[in-house]
Amino acid sequence: EVVLTQSPATLSLSPGEGATLSCRASQTIGGYLAWYQQKPGQPPRLLIYDSSTRATGIPARFSGSGYGTDFTLTISSLEPEDFALYYCQQRGNRPATFGQGTRLDIK
Amino acid sequence: QVQLVQSGAEMKKPGTSVKISCKTSGYIFTNFYIHWVRQAPVEGLEWMGLINPFGGSTNYAQKFQGRVTMTVDTSTGTLYLEVNSLRSEDTAVYYCARDLVRRGDGGDPVFDYWGQGTLVTVSS
Image 1 (cartoon, rainbow over the protein chains, first blue to last red):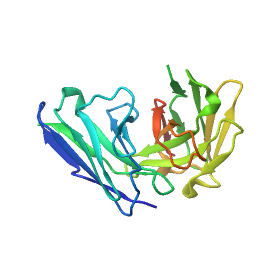
Image 2 (cartoon, each protein chain N blue to C red):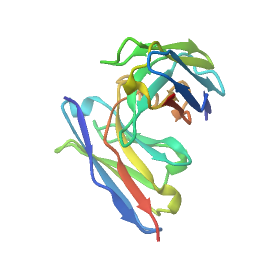
Image 3 (spheres, each protein chain N blue to C red):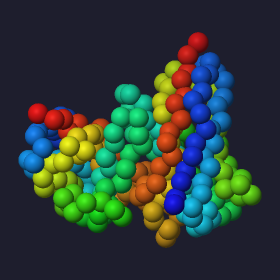
Image 4 (cartoon, rainbow over the protein chains, first blue to last red):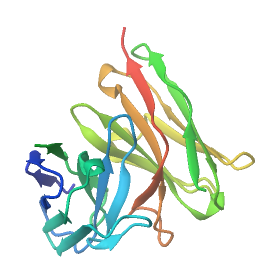
């Protein structure tokens, strides 16, 4: 199965700064990568799917890019509510798998 | 609005079984695959399998084959996950999640709506 490696494990930034989160796949998955945000005690929330398509209701400050094995989630200007855990998930090879997550902390 | 509401937390002993429910509302129930995903402290998020509410066909992850059963009650729009022969490593939060992708056999999912999660603790 495809292993997704997210980096960094933790990212410490201040509100207003930009954030770049990475997800690397162990084999090519085309453009079939999604990003989720998770806050304590809540289920994951879909942000981006198929590498760059924003889910319904997701603010434009969230954007995704990448193809093949390397993918990026960019948050253009961090809002206080953006500090959370972020996971990537691939559907390009079965079974679907998730990365281990990046924690975005307030600096 | 789309809602997936799961049953409450469970405490179980090793070797026993647990059955979790996921009641759906706010959309045409038979039009979307439902998946089960669990989240454990070490393993992280893990896909367990899927069920097609239209007809009840299932596809389980190889790791869970023979130990999990996914079923559906179409009269109430409720899905069920049963896990047998529980062990301590099954301690996790279990989620049902709707698949945004309506084409194909459900094997290439994007999870657009999630239940609130059900904590299952397995301990002697």
